Amino acid sequence: MLMKHTPEAVAERTALSINPAKTCMPIGAMYAALGVHACLPHSHGSQGCCAYHRSMLTRHVREPVMAATSSFTEGSSVFGGQANLLAAIENIFTIYNPQVIGVHTTCLSETIGDDLNQIIIKAQDDGKIPEGKYVFHANTPSYVGSHVTGFARMTKAMVDYYAEHDGTRNETINLIPGWVEPSDIRELKRLVAEMMLECITFPDQSDVFDTPQTGKMNMYPKGGVTVPLIKAAGNSEATIGLGPTASGLATEALEAKCKVPGQLLELPIGLRATDRFIAALRHFNGRYVPDSIIDERGRVLDIITDMHQYFHGKRVALFGDPDQLVAMTEFLVDLDMVPIYIITGTPGKNFDERISAVLGDLADQVIFKQGFGADQFYLHQLIKNDRPDLLIGTTHGKYIARDEDLPFLRFGFPIIDRCGHTYFPTVGYRGAMRLLEKMLDLFLDRKDRDAPEEKFELVL
Ligand code: SF4
Image (cartoon, rainbow, N blue to C red; front, side, top):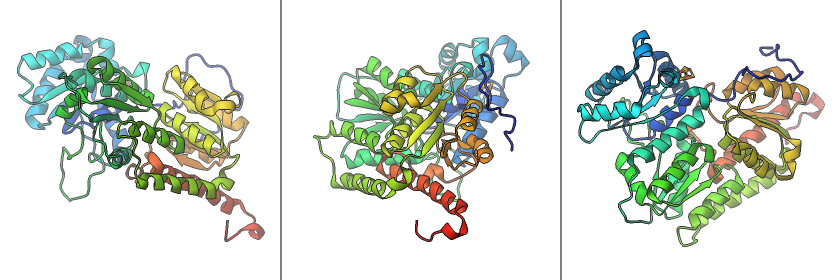
């Protein structure tokens, strides 16, 4: 019983989070920056922060994650980190030769109040940024947000720094995929291509973290959106942003800066959300949906029909990031499952509205909470009072699952005790099939495990 000290009685807390259902803001900024081609993320703070951000991402994607740091010491903590960042920019371009440096702040540099905008302009003026190379930044004070808001800010920074409208419009669609796995981005781009549309995808971590094994180390893999493509995004016909928490800022910024009409959708996880994504694309291609996609959808429906008897009425507790939770909750409701607890540490007022919208009539019976106090300790207390049939969340949930003997579906970020997940999408119709199979296996494995010998069946 690793979590045996969690009491059943829920007491009001005003100043303490225990096992938060979120992680550090710069981690998201780093993940977003790595979706730019040949970008080296740079952490403007102390070495420990950078080591933590890199290690979390490395453990999740099972690939080496490169990043530089301003390596703050006591001196920079007192006098500011400008000298460190200027030296770092020069050294990084000289030694590691990236195309782009994506700088994010940390709690320390934010508390000091370093003005990154001014420092980057000074680096440019001092000739520390070579011709044709780029440096951009996002402010990511971790005490006001989460890894998802850090991701959103860095994605918006791409628009703020580079998107341009030259007065023309073309038929390209901008796709801002949100915080998803490289495999998800590959799947989203496949769906867009099947719909006969051209898209600019940013950030794009496909072919960055899922490159083939060749035996050779390549510091800058072929994937990632290029800066010229982000510039060109200002001339696109429209933007589709997936996941309002992760993609909302960039979608809105592109509309405000370059007048590209933006449409925000929930992540296309599950049947209905994918239908909406396809419907949004259909608007731009003359209302054409190829047979291949109609067939994929039909297969998902067929699988749901076969599996429905096992899912119906199953009660589920979920924790993780808002965009994933809203989409997954809608999918569970469509399967006639019953979400009972939904917890995210990422603060955001619109979470309650979005969750209520997908829960519909069920909303009154579900406990959902965001921001302060919405942590895994609270979730564990709820579970102790009324057990669900399934727990869905990140790797951190394994302790609750073990103590309470719950089937556990790993979903979201981080997943650091399993590997392979970054290669299989959970978005789109194909992703829905995978989620369905994974959930059903959990229920039926449990049934097999718990069945008395006389009821242990070959066919379930
Ligand atoms: S100090 Fe702030 S930026 Fe650094 S690891 Fe901790 S939460 Fe993240």
